[in-house]
Image (cartoon, rainbow, N blue to C red; front, side, top):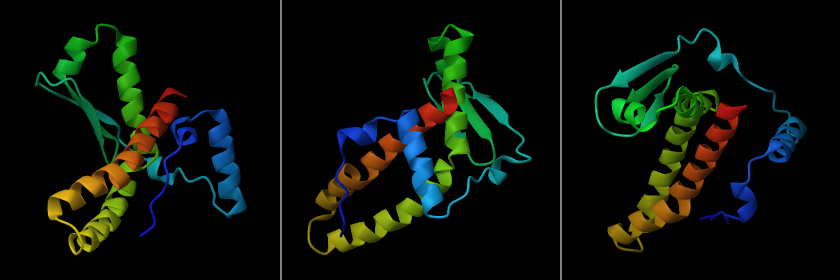
Amino acid sequence: MVLRVWSREDEILDDNWIEHSRKKGKEQGSKSETSHLEGLNWEVVVVNEPMVNAFCLPGGKIVVFTGLLEHFKMDEEVATVVGHEVGHAVARHVAEQITKNLWFTIIQIILYQFVMPDIANVMSTLLLRLPFSRKMEMEADYVGYC
């Protein structure tokens, strides 16, 4: 098993990080891919619940709860949250998460052989899921605010 060390530099997503990431991708032969955004029919669905939250679904669907609309009083605040959710769609975080969940499940099954299931769940969450989740949230912030 390979555990990735989470460093302070991983928490800083700025223009230098983006340029470094693009340069690294080009060196590996990667091309910028935005075809998944073509023809999207963006839709914002408002759910009448007091929860202060919003989330993004594949295909340009964004769900906003009325609790969020009541919590934030200015249009700019709500726009910031919606922009963040658009950032998740642009970065294809749902697809990325599905792929990673497959690997996390395989690692959990292996851990179950050596440690108790509760400990395996805590270990996989703390060491694997949370760092990737934090990175996706920061990336969505950066993409959504640009």
